[in-house]
Image (tube, rainbow, N blue to C red):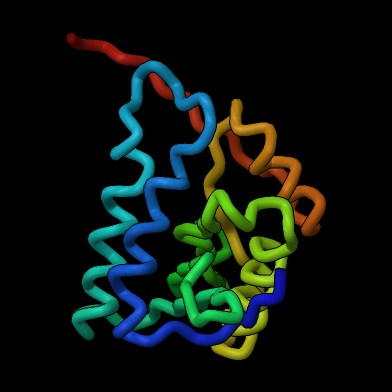
Length: 156
């Protein structure tokens, strides 16, 4: 399958939003619902589409027919500990039809290039500990696991 990665346009909004539920395409922790994994990303994406947010970079992958089959969303923000210019990969999602065909890798590279061009010295991301597929994807791309986040329900 041939695809092209390009900067997203506001008119890509609906197609990008439709891909976000793919963020929950793994065995999510029992303490979460699928919507927890993408609802805030969707709000940030809607703000970007509406021109209500700055420092958000969006890339899409589209197939030969012009259908959006992947999206990457990065926010520019200071790195948590060093406070140096950085970026955070908010979301990367590809259609199930193109999974495993290099679309995610191409989107990640494009997002990294765009973040670097905008002054980022590092890129961070969050991934669930039990999402082995995503962890392998990021580790293969040169990302190192650095912090572990723990959570415990204390009330019903």
